[in-house]
Amino acid sequence: DDDEASSPGANNPIIASDTVPLVLALHCYGGTARTMMHLTKIADEYSFVMVIPEGMSSSWNSKYCCGYALDNDIDDVGFLSKIIRTVEDDTGGLVTRDATYGIGWSNGGYMVTYAAGLFRAIAPISGHIYNVREDIFPTTADRDVTTTTAIFMHHSVNDQYVRMTGCCTNSSMPKCCCGISQNADICVSAEGVLRSWAVDVNGCSSASGSAMSISREDGGDGVTCHTISGDGCRANATICIHSTEGHFNSPSFEAAFRMQNDIGDFFARDACLINRGTWSAEDRSCTCEAASVEGRYCLVDGIASSNVSEVDGTERPFSSTSFVLI
Image (cartoon, rainbow, N blue to C red):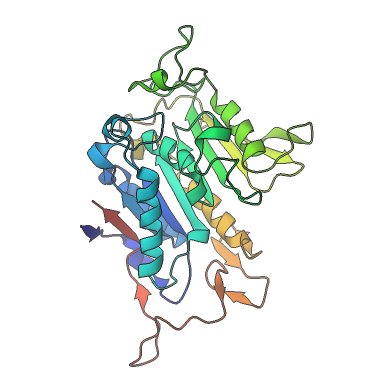
């Protein structure tokens, strides 16, 4: 059953004739949809529609991780694809698959990278696929050459569950939790994954034409971010390295991971740029530069009327911006 979850979205309602980003938030192995419910604050503050699905037996089949879904080869890519299509069809233009984004923690991070072809941008936290060229769906060989997926990775150097240096069968490397190390022969670091992503997915030059530079200095919170930019890069590839947060599970994911709004801004800025809008992080607003588009994220061509009341001609706001699929 699909149960609509309560949300503070009434404070910043979405007008139903608008088109706004759709965000999927995926839980860790052993977690549930409720694990990610605090992220509905992002939906409220940035006017996203957020769907929080729940994997079978609290797991996702993302090739390397984890549990029931992996062991039984559950088609979770197909599941997420169906969610996106259903929400797009059922909301009458409120969302579009062309502005769909994914957040995932741990097993959920593996999942959003594995299913990257479904998203315009993703934010994996403490989990990601390792062989970028072969692992993502669809594989780089099968993707259209213009298809990109921006990535905003997060990992902590002292994560003992999913090692930042990678998870693999190499006996000289420290092991990861949940049997993940058994599913890869070669350890690839988080920075190595980012570099491969920038080249293989986002078109950056593999030569000296692109480089990794600091895009966010450690301001005393133990977080430094690095972005790859340069020749050929068609989308953002950034990693934020956290120094002391482990797996972001102590005392809870909500308390340990404190960059939710940074992810909201990353997705919002990207959505605004689809039709060449100008994003203001300070005002959290997108200014449409082209006269042919409008809406909160400049995603509407002309004036949509499918959700205008036949009684009084007024637009009906969506008072809730988040849904839970159980």
